[in-house]
Length: 112
Length: 113
Image (cartoon, rainbow over all chains, first blue to last red; front, side):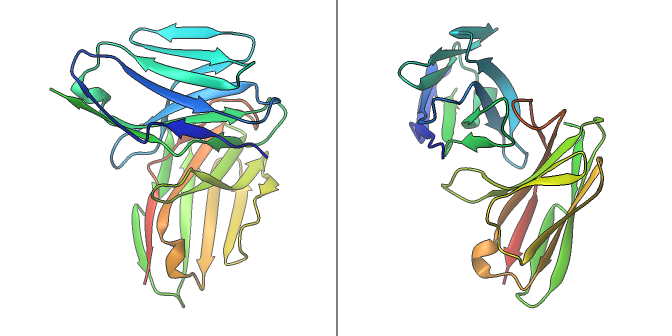
């Protein structure tokens, strides 16, 4: 089965700096890569996703890059703000499958 | 609000109790999921229902019993749980199973004493 590794487990940045979270996966059949943000007391919420036919996707201050050859993908948050503080999860999925495989999460703290 | 509600938000139960968790989605989705979230571990998929039919059961102990009476409602019936079952139980829904965006509810924080 799929094995998703996520690093770092905790990350602290100064407000305005960039944050990068990386994930690697093992199953070459994986072709869908979402990122979720989970705030305290809430369920995870999708913030951006990418499919395997695309190498990079950007939405305002967040971007995701995918390297299918190396089997890794990354989340980039620029100009971080205190409200970006949360736990971020990467995941992988397969078009024909029924489930996602999640990473262990990164707790991001943005220091004002 | 994601359109997925869960009740109760918190539950404390003894090992001999029977309780149920409820999930409801107002998004017109066809697939619903139960996940277990424990500290320092990845989200663990427990069950998947697609068009009310169970399509995945990831080796979940029989003390957890899901029920999906229609595409909008999902239950998780609990009985004779163990302390290690204490966790946040998340429900999610998506348009279909597979690589569709999943919308999560806020979860039920379960404590087994």
